[in-house]
Length: 484
Image (cartoon, rainbow, N blue to C red; front, side, top):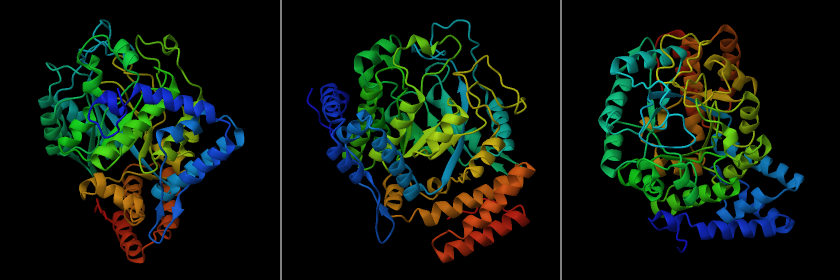
């Protein structure tokens, strides 16, 4: 089928023919230093009167960079990726946690232990009381932002169950704790159901494509509703038609050849821009990991750490305004390197089990219903301290979502640089909340020092003074939830 980024048909905006042509073009030009330099220069952020501007890259241009094996050019990619991240997101890193609601699933996905044929994994679905207990446990850790996860099962996990869980999550107010943003990672569904999710007050709707290679997709999803490649791939268009402003893309690297997946991912971002005027709010970069009955070695497209980091840098150059997510699937070492090439969101203290938080100490970790092995098993407090030691501001901010700065409104603020006067002080205020209510003595000590130093960097003087007064109130009282 002919390539058309503005088409609403999956096989036209993710064209196999165009991906193959792009990869051929990239291979032909991977040593073309003049072209590579032109592409890198195009990707670089440009200072303007109001902030920074970035053009981004086409899928063909980005594929050339990914194919390039010249060490000094790769290093330049990394440097520009960090420049872009700092230009638009500063040194803030948003923190979240996954909350698994149910592992009942009717699909046959070959890379996921929740597949229907797995008869020995414990099946579990949280009751609303159990959801409440999980939320309290997460609040006691200090989390403000969750990504809820569920298998696809129209009997056990219908949309009504998901909506009830969202309502329960938002209803729990425990001590100084509140979950202020619920992102949703559930199976592709209808426009009507997306409208219901929007009405329930969700933040970002996240759906991993898994693989953009249609034949591989159908092989990896042999049974169940997820087998339908077009329905799955077109889900983001239905979500946005249903009123959801912010959507999150991602592929599961290791299922198919990574250069193919990368090109498809960037094409999907181009499609959202072409049709809806706004690209993906987030892009996640998970890799296939060991799980209950899943052996990553069974998939012959695994990628090493260096390639993985290069992919992330190229995503940042191609889609400069997106939030990039790295989860606890990856080790501390890999996550540290990813922070240098553009990642802006990380999970912390994560459990991938259904009911993995309530009733367990930070050191305990149930394994019976895990979706995948967690490589970074540090507590949230350890992750917060680690980020600050590396010069990053851990942010628990959810203000843009609750102030209506979503979709194209968020992107416009991000693109003109004004987001710095919102996000920077909001990050500091939410970090202060965490330090006062949940942090260890060490984390609190280094965090308060960081806050005092970073306050001076808030560009707008009025915003800086308001933030300073709000932080003073947080430190000296139980007043919480200040936001710009």
